Length: 541
Image (tube, rainbow, N blue to C red; front, side):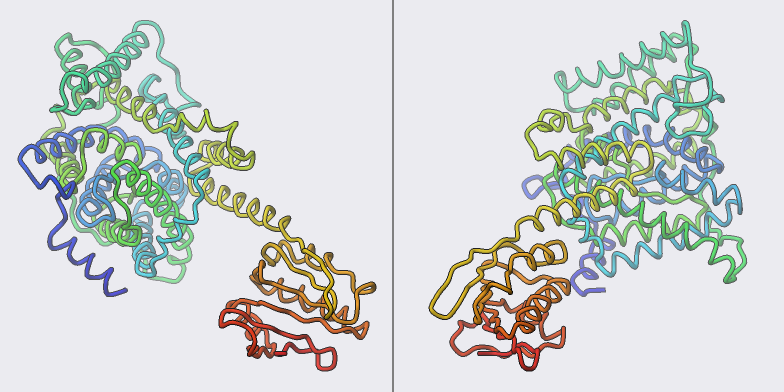
């Protein structure tokens, strides 16, 4: 592990950074805001953790323990304050097949291995590759995830116990009707109204917490018969205990869990790092990708040994936190601690909270998460960027986040390669020393064929110069294209001269086995190279 990263990581463990800005320290008012924000997040975590446990086919406490363990550890040592982690649907849909075929103990072993893989990714600093995700992919990710959060809430509008086996709540089960549906819609609307109005009255109490409190008080006070948290499952339990997964230590076991662990680790890191970037844009803080990978890995490794289903960053709860004013690690720690208190002693109260209040909170998260400005700029951005945004949004909804991001990056990369491939051209002029081709644009695998087509060996004079001052030789395909052109001139007994190759081009030619000698008449950053028609090698002139 790089020394600087290790030192920073150790410092986070010994003394977590609880200050939310250089100007305001860890003051009593800040503590109050962070604690209330953590309480709000914890209330929203309960139904999510229970629902995702059902999706994965495990006991609800397995999801709640994961939300507590992953949330606590990542809050303490994660890459960015303000992020909330826990059990997520993106991971649950992958786990369901493993649990169904091999049981929950194999799931715990898989989560441990998943965590170790994520730690390895952090040590190798692979988190920096999140920078390669283009902005249209980020927009698609945000929009798609907002839609997924919205669809996930629709299951609460169905008769309890009839939601079916899908995470989105779109198929299976019976919709509420009549008076129950009216109450549900009315309470959801009231929650959203309170959340919208509250910041205009006071910012002491987080608006989502106020919405939950008002609606819960109304429902409990009037004794309204509406779906509540307790209708999903009982959340009462004890402290998570250390437990070594009861699986055989064999090659066959590793063959079973390794594919799942790799997929889960990749999905978890992609969702966490994208959420890290999104939270960073809101809070104005940067960095921490590799540290976040390590924190997620340690959290999942520990969770696997304490009977949890693993998890990653949660964009919905992270948005609730930052919108409620949570800016330090205290908010995430508080959310995890409150969640554990709910499990230990607070279940009778928490189970009375109406689901409509939590649905209203998540609907407001959807409204705040969806990049509405992306709809306005669709007609103004390049067509390919608009296509990538829509594509990633659709794939996120139809498949999952990891597939959507990979597809978006690949399509963006291919579009970029195609655009650069079309840029290759040459300015052609004749001098006393022969014909000169001044190449414009990058020379790489996508433009190599176009580069070859620029030349006319049959009609060119005996001396030809190819000037790369405005070009860049990028890869092996480019070298092969240069060699193919040179061989054509060689067969006709003509000489070709390469000029102004940059230092990295020089290195590529050396790696390819060609002899390159710096020219005395070129500046330090330039090279002049001849292709000898006699020996077939490059050399200085």
